[in-house]
Image 1 (cartoon, rainbow, N blue to C red):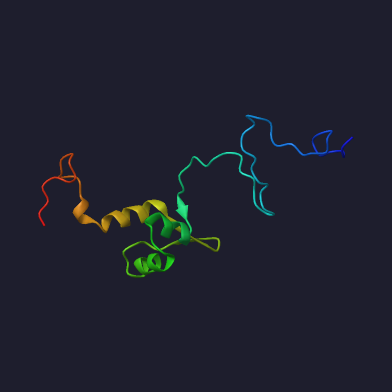
Image 2: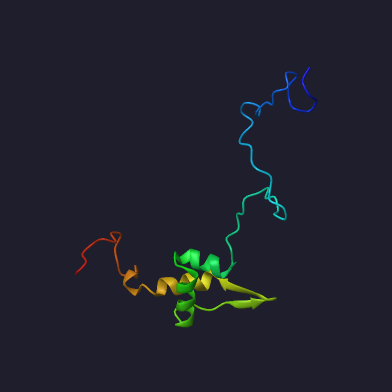
Amino acid sequence: MGERGNGTASGHATGPEPGAGPVLPAPAKGERKRTRKRRIPPLGMSLQEAADSLGVSQNTFQRLVDDGKIPGPTQLYGRKVYSWQHVSQAFWALFPHLDTKDQDDDPWGEQTV
C-alpha cells in the first residue's frame, strides 16, 4: 500500500480531476486572495498606474505633471493619488487635432498634409 495522503493507493500523486479548471498557485505571503474580479473602474491611481494608463514611464509622466500638462496628485493620508478622470481629460487635451465634434463618421477622411 502507498503512503498516506498522497492521492492514490499506489503511492503516485494524481493531478486535478478532469474538468476541474486550472490549478492556481497559492497567494504569496501577505498577499490577499482575490475571489472576485474588480468591476469598478478606479477613481484614483498611483504614479505607476497613472503612467501606465498613458503608456509612458513614471519619469515622463512626472515631467508632464511638472510642465502643467497633466494635473498633479492629491495627498490622501500620506499617499499620492492621481484622479483617473482628470488625467484622462488632460491627456486627450494634448491632442486638439483629434477633436471629433466637427468630423463625420470617417476619422481618416479628407486630411491635408
